[in-house]
Image (cartoon, rainbow, N blue to C red; front, side, top):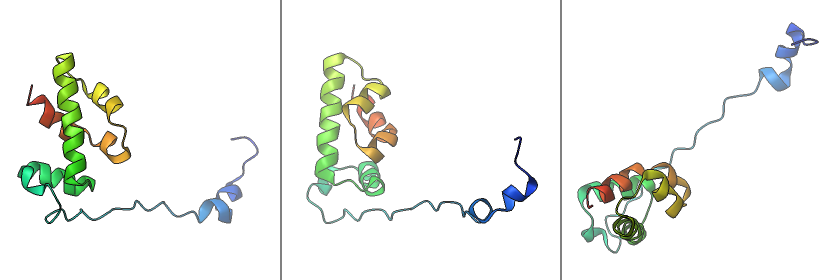
Length: 103
């Protein structure tokens, strides 16, 4: 870049910036929550990793299955538009896989 010397990269505001730490959350213990007995082992693991309560997961799954039956098929992007929850929108492939096996 014109006008930037080698000393610019050694400026404290540039040189001392530490990389951002990614916050990793521990899986949620859902073993004693209401509705956990209705989930399969795979669904329990998904809920735990997404930190999602079983009742919320079942409501989301129900909505995805109903929409899938109503439309005949539900694409991943359509599922993401229906379910707009931060982590879940990113990790929806697990729930989408579960619902696509039902149709």
